Image (cartoon, rainbow, N blue to C red):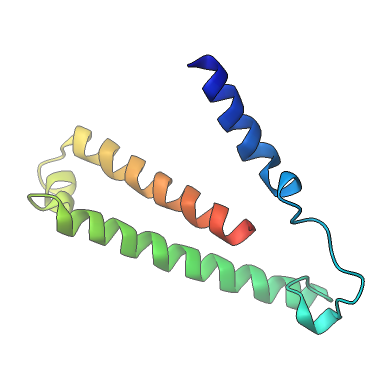
Amino acid sequence: MNALRLVVLTLLFTGSSLLGADAEPSTTTAAATWHAQSLGQALLYTFIFAASGIIIAILGYKLFDFFTPGDLHKEIVEKQNVAAAVVAGAVVLGICLIIAAAMMS
């Protein structure tokens, strides 16, 4: 089991270099890549990815709340259910990890 964990962690931290994502073809033009050519472009791309990531994370949380029995928001806010809050936090973190991995590839 520990060997499997080691393999998974190794792939998580070195996945992009193993898959050849860092290699760029020599005929690539600046307009055909997502690499920012200026500070303004970098800030724009950061804003776009951050906004889309937040929106997708909220939608993922709402979907989780929809498909589970009861009202998760009511459980957390009105009844102050700590266990429900921990589960909701874990769901949001899991969704955000998936979004981040998708955006980095």
